[in-house]
Length: 422
Image (cartoon, rainbow, N blue to C red):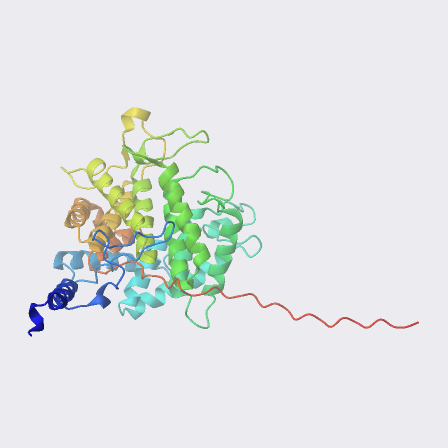
């Protein structure tokens, strides 16, 4: 009797056919591609991400070959910044005694690419900046003029303190240097006087307690770089809280990131610097920790800048949006510096996501400022970093968040003293 024609034989053949179909559906990678119980996001069988925890995001785009025109502009701007090196003042320092963090960042980036002269000058400026640290209250003074005992300033703002923290994090691993110790002093000062436990940074040690997107964006960029260097999960979670609070409290659907007063009312037009600094913070947070919501927020701000701030006829970006609703802001306008940060944000966004619309918008900006590049200035370093972002790869590497925090050593208990008998 042939078993193939029996009901049992048909069941065996049917089971074998189903097994072959399942193996074909897995493809050549087999179960190891995504795991037996998981699948890529948006596909059947995918597990939802745990609430409140970052999901592994796609790897950022790798470094690419620079465009010849971009490379030529980058070298030209770098040479201008390099020509303003002043050994007598301390390095990349302005005439008023304040260091240029962007110039130091550019020199560190060039040093990482193999330029030993640029690296040496960056380290020289950072060593000079050590003298601006307040050894009593903590944190940095803004410049040399604040060290004069007749005009001493205790306004150690968040923006330049956390920008300098980001610089120190880049070189904190160097031995026989004080950079790591200086960074911890800045962190201690920031956590004591500049941070809100609920999330967010105050603009300065004294003054307004309102949440401002620009200063928080600058602070988060330095904060994220230190988190990646130190693999500090606690400070990473504080960055998450800050970004969530910024998106919830400082965003209007039609205006983007805005500044509110104590009663929650929008007090001025939407500013370019608020959109771009916050957008860079969200983008760096996604690169460092892989939380997909941060990438979505950065993308939304990039689209908002392109739609409402970009001047499509002349190139570049307006410094404010919807001024007719509030009247022009009294804030000092910085079109050169604000446009540089905007171009950097869109260039990094385009490189990280492959969105050529963002990259082309950034290129239109530095083309529009071509005449302004004829005069050397330290602020050109921000433009050079924007141009470099089109090929340099991700600004931050993914942090190693699986490292367990070090436990504090518990001193051994002393043996109880024996009581003397009388």
